[in-house]
Image (tube, rainbow, N blue to C red; front, side, top):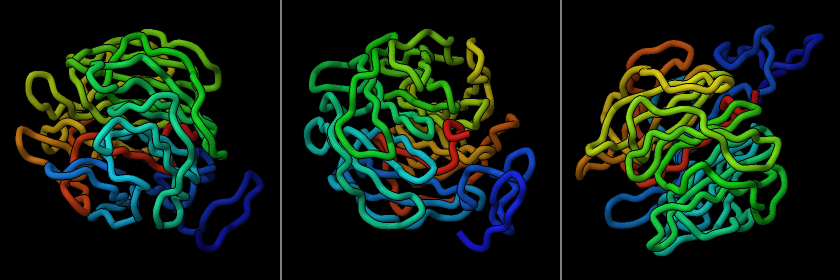
Length: 322
């Protein structure tokens, strides 16, 4: 982490990126906001690849390590130190939960099991609690299950409550108090929310600007973004909401490439979308936006391989950790 300098309010890294510093130049986040993308599908096989990026910079992703099992359709969440991927499809629906220590590199370790084997779920988290919602089970088009874990420990997931609708292929994001889930199969516009610190069923939040499935989510501590997805075709739309309120989403701008089933992650100021699928083509494209503004995304770099179908994105500095 480099040299640390003391202040009356805490510690921060000398030369720390100001985009991840708080109002007084101090932050509980690591000096380097790091984003990870795990799992996916390359058209002929599931992959176990985990890539990482430094969110404050631009450039191509670097290999981090491997998931315990190659699979697509994973949900992801994280604390400021630990990244977690749950469920997916490894040839059949999976209940596997893996974790890594984000500041290092290396292969994932078994964390425990989810309450149901499923794929295409959505994840979000606070600093302490991770949620995995919805998903696809065999011929069942969607479930409304929400599981939770305590990220700092290992063990099996516990029932949290239910979504407002049974669905899969949708996006999750969070502030430190509230988790949001948006869109879903088949191209629904529903946004629902939960209070992460409690357990219970989700409540209606509002609607996306258009019904779509397989968006990617990311957030600052106040604003949530839903990027890409599919209506009848893949779209480049980015919507945003103010997480502390309820209401319908507003247009933010466009991704550089229309796509579905990408992965999303963020620092407190920057949102990143990686990978995905358009028509018959998988992409390695990584885009970024400045969350506090509106406007079109800018090219960030490339993943180590083009992949889609639930690339699980997470970071050590997202909006749920504020």
